[in-house]
Image: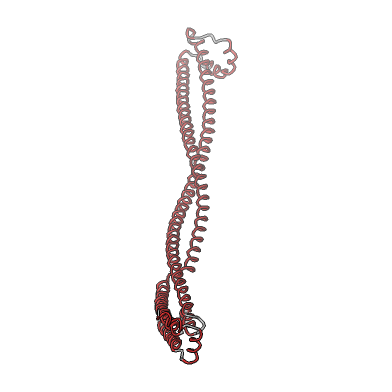
Length: 362
């Protein structure tokens, strides 16, 4: 009770007025000295970190007298939070940059491989197209030559056959003439072998008049055998020649028919091969067009990826190159701010103690 009464008395308005007039404000002086010392100590904690805007602002606030310790501490807390957030942003940005750069570099590698593959396929198609064109040209030329050869062989066969027909007709006429002449001789010299000519043969009598005249000159029986023998020889030679001509005609016809058959088969195979080559050529040309479109699109993709890579490097290279330095600088700032904050925390404690003394002195 006594202490409480004493404090009540000392805290009265009259006592306070008296103390202000008669006693030096040692408590207030102590508070001011303590605040100055702590500000100085806080500034010393910030020494060695020149060039930091945050620390310069805190130093400016500590050197001034308008902001109290709590305000300065609040500034430090805000700046520390800002530094932590900036580091988080840098961490996230570095992760993003590393991931995106790796991704775009991998994509560029894939696109380069694809471009090389497409170019290789284009080269293959161009070679195939040239080969197909050469083969088509050769097949077309071969077919034309074959058709020309068959046409020539056909004309030759027609001419040979016509010559055979004409010669066969002439030989047959000559053979009939010899038979007629021999029969006429038989009428005079070998009546028993004479054959009465058929009515339609009588009109041929004029054709052999010369042969008959020749026979009439042979008046003797002795000459008849020689003439008859001569006619037989002529007739046999003529028949032999006719048989040989017939065999040659048959062989020539068979050879022509074989040539024609072989040519037809060869042309059919060539035509089928030509159709296949033309189809393959059309497919290769179509594929080549598609590949060129694909190459154009892939080149565009490559250029776009390279631009993306360039943009990423422009955005990220500085951060990646200076990441550790920036992190270290923030750590140093945080360390300095933390020390300054610790000093100012001591100031708050002193202020509380002095306030109590001041209150009592009041």
